[in-house]
Structures are given as structure tokens and as C-alpha cells.
Length: 251
Image 1 (cartoon, rainbow, N blue to C red):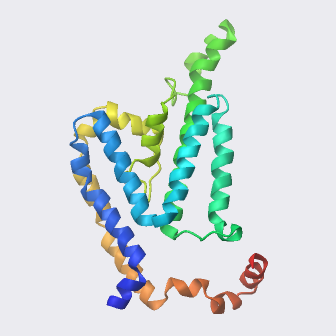
Image 2 (cartoon, rainbow, N blue to C red; image 1 turned 120 degrees about the vertical axis):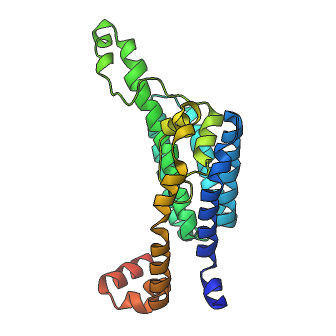
Image 3 (cartoon, rainbow, N blue to C red; image 1 turned 135 degrees about the vertical axis):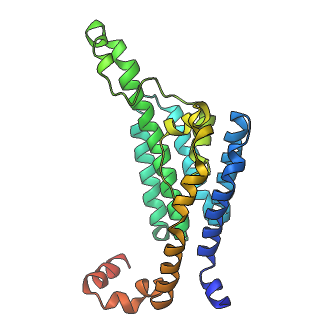
């Protein structure tokens, strides 16, 4: 039993943090002010990143901060392009860090990094999309004003959060470990619309958790029958010719 715990220590910590994220939800929602909720969510998110990733936490934290700065430094017209190229370039470096002489991060950190990439790029596209739908048509004269009512209903107002709100959105603990991805507009609505105060969060949580014991049982069973380490062992790779060739190319 102890050997199993040692072998799957990272997964156990990760699962424990997921359960912690669920259990702390009711207390998080009870915070009175918007600022308290935002800062609490951000602090919890950064703490989760550090606990899960250790020294590798520098990747999601730094990439998110640089991405946010790029969004605010570039104009709203081009922020989505600049952010897209930077975040995916950093993701490429992150996934192939060993080729640059750095240590590869864990699978759990990979998941967090992907969520960070989606959030930072997503909010940049939201900002640009809202600008194109709301502000830009007004600058093109009377001919375009008549088309404003036909714009994408997803953007009924300009989305242009300040740098602090971008940081809060990027690091909020909700959905940070496994998702789901949600847009900045959803994040903002959580603080300003009354739905979050009346929704049956406990009921939705229980319905979601009903299937979790089955997933855990299947994971433990298959981990015992066929450990994941077998899939990346040289013996397994060499038995598959295409994988063998690909492995040699990478090496």
C-alpha cells in the first residue's frame, strides 16, 4: 500500500487539491465583497499552482503575467494576435523544455499551463471581438451604424478589463486544475449577476461527483494491471515500429 502511495504521490496530491477546490467553494461564495472574492480566488489559484508544480510553477505564472502585459501594451485591435503567438510560442518551449536544457514539467503542470494559455488567449480574442462588434462600426460612418443591431449578440458591450482583473481571471482557482475553460464574460458575470447567488451549487456538485468513484476505481484497477510507465518504456516503444522511428528522431 505504501509503495502504491509513493508511486502515485503526485496523482494523490492532485486529487486531494481537486477535492479541496470543491469543498472550499461554499465558503468562497459566502465572501461579501467583489474584491474579496477576486483576491481570494487569485491567491488560492496561485497557491494551487505552486503546490502542484513546485519549481515548475514559474512557467504558468510567468507566461500568464507576460501574456497579460502584452494584452495591455498592444492595442485592442491587435492584442489577440500578439497574445496568440506569444502564448503558443511559450507553450512550444514549455512542452520541449528538455530540448533546451531544462527539466520537463509534470503532467499536472501541463494541464494548468493549457488552462492558462486558453484563458489569456481567450480574453484577448474577447476584447478584440467586442471592439469589432461595438466600437469599430461606429467609426465607419452612418452606413455602418445601421449594421450595429445585427452584430454578434455575444458582444453587447465593450470588454476591456484592467490589468488587475486580467490577473484575477488568469489565476482564479475555479477550473484551474482541470477546467472547464470559461470566458472572461462568464467570470465577470459571476461577480455582477444574481444567478450565482441562487443557483443550486450543491445539487450540481453532487450530480457531478456521483460518477467520480467509478473513475477512481477504474484508474486504480488499470494502474495496477497496466502501469502508465509501461507506455513510455523503451521495451514498449521498440515493439511499435512507427513509435520506434519517431523516438529515434526525437533522440
